[in-house]
Length: 575
Image 1: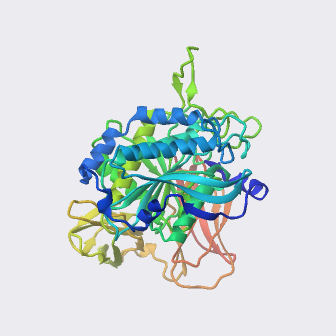
Image 2: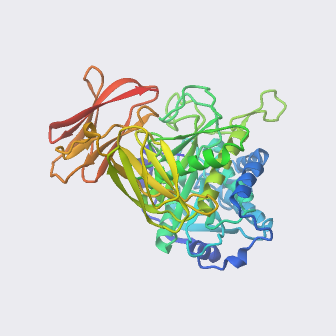
Image 3: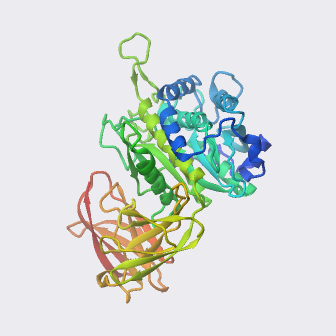
């Protein structure tokens, strides 16, 4: 999990300017991702494809001891820096990625050779090394017409304070042996089952220096025409202890423990396919998994794409138009600042498995909670599985009527027996999800306001697709919310309150020329606390305001266009 602030300083000095010669070392893996294969060549000797069996199997078979064994093994490589040793068979990044590759091969052997291993090789000067490799494995789906793939990923590289320090001990347990272990465990468990869409399990490289491995795969997908349906990135996903520092949105304070919550980061607000993916994953957990688990988890959909000033391997995929999001622990041990007085473990040699508290040479106090990591793996696995077996996503039109109500008309993929209609207002989550048997239905949301509506297809087994784009509408009769004479309509911030970031939106009612626009935020005394430039060229235009952890009180925010206050609203923080 890199610190984006460091990129500017290290990029010119240490790295080349682009990735070249991006290839899959196994041509078969590439052809499968393109849909150029016969599914009959990869049929399991024991086909299990019913969603109930898959969900139950993932929940029952993800094993905390297995995850623990992977993490212990990853620690033995000592330094997994992107520029570390590639010749040794026991230490360095080369040995680590070869071990991951061998694990994929062993999993394949145990599952009718259905998991196809490969490296994604690319040339780029990073930390003095010219060539690098992601390690990935492809589980072929049964549908070569709808040949979209789902990616479950986590970066394998580690680092100490120095971004290219290959001599330090950099076990990188929370960041990010935890994510790599999760990917390996899901490859082991999910390879037992059969899916409609192809699933790719990947350990990326070069994350700590600039998201380079993920960027290479995203660019490779664009160049080859590989269709990516969803990317589930896992980074810092096993720790439960809060450090003295951590990047906002932050944990409460030093040594706070949270093993019952996981954060879902994704880009955008209105009509964001990334937020829609996060909402889908949370819905699948609530409806398909929650009743089966012994320890319930809270899935928190965050407003921001990542923690403040930070980044992860979901970002290069989002930048190229693919739906991508990130799973991260509720608590993390540090903000990776590594400055004077920094005592947390992240990005240091202290990011280790744990400590020996009784001097018997056996680690007995762990910094990673393997059961917590297992629960997060199950959430990933079930979400990925349901997206890999679901139907095609529909589209919709939306018409506001008196009442107030909304007429929802399904306009694409009209062959399914049912559809689901998701509605939200001022929060990141859906307020309601309706089920309908009709292509045209009228819904009456429970309260007045502005609504964001999307739809999903439901097949004969009751499995929903990923949800469509969002459409914004204000039911007629809510005159106080309409500003027809104002070309720019300032909407209520959302969520309000929620996490450390809130989204402020402006709806453009008609195209109007202007020079500059800002959102001005003031405290209760009227003092300006933030000035955010905003572009007003789209139907919905958004900025994010990072108000900080534990912020309380009443604030106002105003839309200023060419020096004129257009409108003002209030927001209340009570978290």
